[in-house]
Image 1 (cartoon, one colour):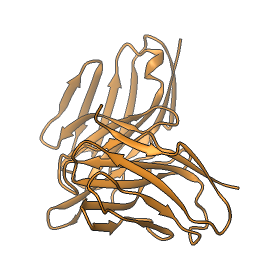
Image 2 (spheres, chains in turn yellow, green; image 1 turned 90 degrees about the vertical axis):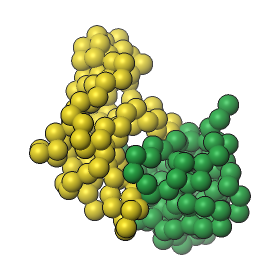
Image 3 (cartoon, helix red, strand yellow; image 1 turned 135 degrees about the vertical axis):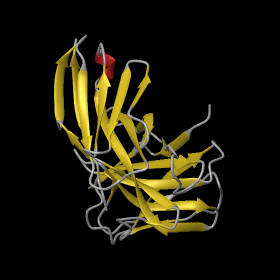
Length: 114
Length: 115
């Protein structure tokens, strides 16, 4: 089954800089989701982008989707130390009929230095 | 507060022992899920349930068992047959199971270690 692969695996930036994380997947999708995970905690849903959308914003988050390249990017602008976390993309995988399950990538670990 | 509660936060298992991880939700969600996360890895689906008294195997169900006797509760038992149980276990829920555009709500996780 398909799986999102994030790039880079780890990213270290200075507070105030922008952080860009990429996700590539293998087969066509209906939507793609981004989640955030603080160390030792559960995941929190950030944003969902549908296959017919090219860009979506939520606060300081900007997600793009390029279905021709089978890739998505998550941009965090004006980063803060509190943005330090792991970020995962998740894509839907058709199981049978109209039944889907989410497939998670291995994540990008972001460190924002004060 | 609405949400998902997992307990305990940390759990230690002796060899040959079965242990049970608790997951309770008050979001009135039909679907519940268990994922396993190994260090530096993504999440792998163990089991999921679409409705009370029904559950389905995920990608790595061997050595695990679940029950769904109540809508709010979806406990996971790690049996002695699971030879490599050390991992971070995450419970999640969604309005419906296995449908497009469903976002997952996660608990805060249980770290299971082997003594």
